[in-house]
Amino acid sequence: MLIVLGSATAAPGRRDELLDAARGVAAATRTDRGCLAYSFAADVEAEDRILSIEVWADRAALDEHMTHDHTQEFLRVAPGLVDGEPVMSFYEVATDPG
Amino acid sequence: MLIVLGSATAAPGRRDELLDAARGVAAATRTDRGCLAYSFAADVEAEDRILSIEVWADRAALDEHMTHDHTQEFLRVAPGLVDGEPVMSFYEVATDPG
Image 1 (cartoon, rainbow over the protein chains, first blue to last red):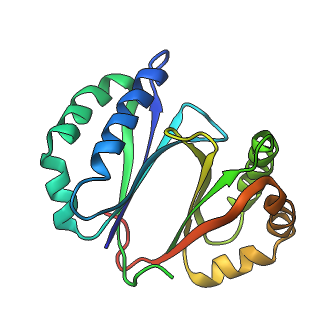
Image 2: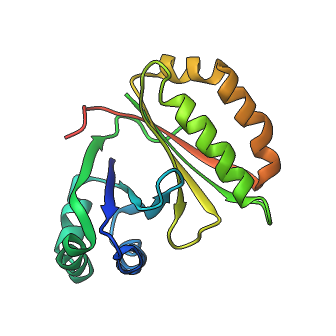
């Protein structure tokens, strides 16, 4: 199992577009093989800070997800809608969730 | 390292109070020993669905956090501000984040 936690700051005036793109890729991604959880959420302390929470059955499922059209489309548009680089952290999970 | 992912639905009319309480406990918690990340965020697909993302150095740090006044205060008020029970998942991390 793999957890991916990310955060990015919406570029000035592009938050709505970013959230629309995020909603689109999230809905499509939850049908991807091995996707156990996938959400975008706005930090309650800084609403332009958008967090992503992904849980994958394994690395192969995430790799497969990266090849899908909906993922590639999001990766195409997202850089123009965020300020700077997103911060992504990847965690291999030792035990199934308690 | 331990990741805790949670989600809860704000009770009708109580979302603002829940977010205020969440902001308070989040700010205090990030000063707790072993707290590597701690945020609440509103799901962009369902704004009443509030997600929590916690990363702890180890289980002992989380256990210690649970004893603090700010945690106990949040646990006291939160049940009245959410609909039903929060869903919490605990993941032991095998490798440091890549």
